[in-house]
Amino acid sequence: MTRRHIMFAACGLLAAMLALDLRASPPNPYNAPAVLALGSGAAPVGGFCGAPAGLPGS
Amino acid sequence: MSSTVAIPATEARRRLGALPLTLLLLAGLAGTALFAGARFGLVLALGLGFGLVLEGLRFGFAGPWRAMIERRDPGGILAQLLSIALVAAVALPLLATYPDELVGAQGRIGWAMVGGAFVFGAAMQIVLGCGSGTLVNAGSGNAVALVALPLFCVGSLLGSIHLGWWTELGALPPIVLSGGAGLALTLVALAAVAVLVVALAAPGTRRIQRHHLLAAVLLAGLAIGNLVVAGQPWGVVYGLGLWAAKGAAALGADLSGSGFWAAPVNAATLHGSILTDYTSLTNIGMILGAAWIASHRAGSLDQPAPRLPLRGWVAAALSGLVLGYSSRLAFGCNVGALYSGIATGSLHGWVWFAAAFAGSAFGLRLRPWAGMEGKR
Image (tube, rainbow over all chains, first blue to last red; front, side, top):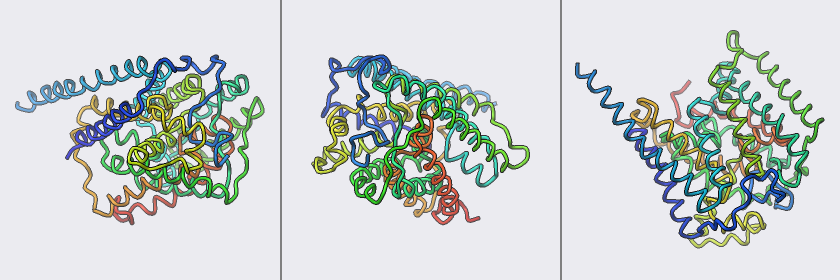
């Protein structure tokens, strides 16, 4: 087995995960936020590794 | 004679083999922008940039720490400090000016956070891959990273479920160095660490290699771009835990009883598309960007997988699990806590740095025992 097989395995697993997720939770482009958060006037809402206020552990 | 014919043929086959990946990446970018939104396509592009820079310019975190501990070679760490300083110089003023639109990488300093960072540092030296390193290594065909990655995701999920219990052991509220004073303090502290590692360095090693210098600047640009586009800093661990959480939910697990996954932000990402989660997008980009570099690097993918003893593969899997769990308790890995934490003024980034570096020194002693290399 070479690194090529491992790279294809990694990309294949990623593709399978995305395909399953797209089927279960298709994105809705009509709910898309502004292109840039900076200047959008909207509060950031994404999940993050840290501990934003209001989350358990915060 | 035969070799002169074989080399161009191999080169042509390699280039031909890389073409579908290039087309796939372009289609993925366009598809994400079209079907999820332009912002998400842009974040995926930033993730690809992270992967291209990290793999293409051989920039990492675990390796340079190992070089400093074992050979007193500070070049890689100096590049990391420079990159963090560049991001801080832009990010901290932006965060101070636009507090309603941008958020930093805050974390709480506590017993579990310190312990988690120490354990993460040890585990990342066993597999020689941190958060970003595991993704990039898996994408470029590293078997150890591919074994560690799925369990990294599972560990991150388990850590998120137990996070409340661990944090109740004792933790301070997030402490943030903000504004002009925060920036000055951050830059002085980064310079002080740079002076310290240079003072401890072996003679003849006190410089940053040119490719690491370039990587430091490019990474800083991408990290600032991440903050401006996504409204939050570059992170890794959250996305990996989300992937495992989605997998668990698909298998019938009910995560609504978890305080972490029941929180509105996390419940929304759990039920939303992966293509709308920023850390997932940059993670995906890092894997694919590294794969693209590897597919264009002559001979890179033709190398055989490493021959490790069984305990080496078991150690890789367990280390992956530990990496995920510990980084969740530590409020991030080398990217979310160290790089983005320090660059956006979170004091927990500094504590993470000290604890993970101590853990790295310990982890390097575990490598031979774990079957990852010959006994020293």
